[in-house]
Length: 278
Ligand SMILES: [Zn+2]
Image 1 (cartoon, rainbow, N blue to C red):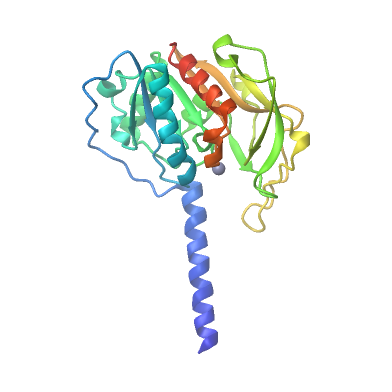
Image 2: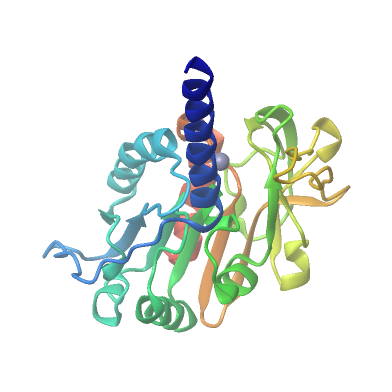
């Protein structure tokens, strides 16, 4: 009898683990159809903060980031609207915003109509800032991955998950580089991408010194082939023009602590100003 209970428990654990992996990889995708009410006083420099997660949820990071973005908006005089409602991605409401932040979003967060509206918004001059999981492989959208982000996610560090390494600033747009250190040492769950975003027209803001980490993200059975990095040129934050719009992506931001680091907040506020052409 005890053996059967043990077997049952093991089976339950296996199912739970399987669901967790499936959710992280593909998401349990649902879509809103009723758009939120926008505040009537949205004006001036406007930012939409979108933190919907249909896949893995970086709960602590998202919770920590919300008041930080609110404070950043207040200090800079931006009008900020925060929602996890994907139905805000419609032509009428998107036009109220200069910048849209995908804050650790995961899974397939928009339906086809909402995707089309968002793509048009960017191509017609909208701004995009993607944070950490916004660049992982759970989004299942070729244009988003190849054109808007510009790199295909492979895996993140696992042995150990969090490692401290140096990042080097590259010279580029003065709005983006403003106030940022040329050398920045940071602890992160480091992302590895299959391709270098430079090949997709991206300009790199920070490059990770990969020699300081073990990029291995292999897992027995599930992902045994992830023992590789990107080599000497490992971009970790970058930006590009997409149509008339602008896209910025940073792979940093897994941990809540990242939203307490002055360098990261400076980078994100630069990114919002640059993407919104403020
Ligand atoms: Zn993460």
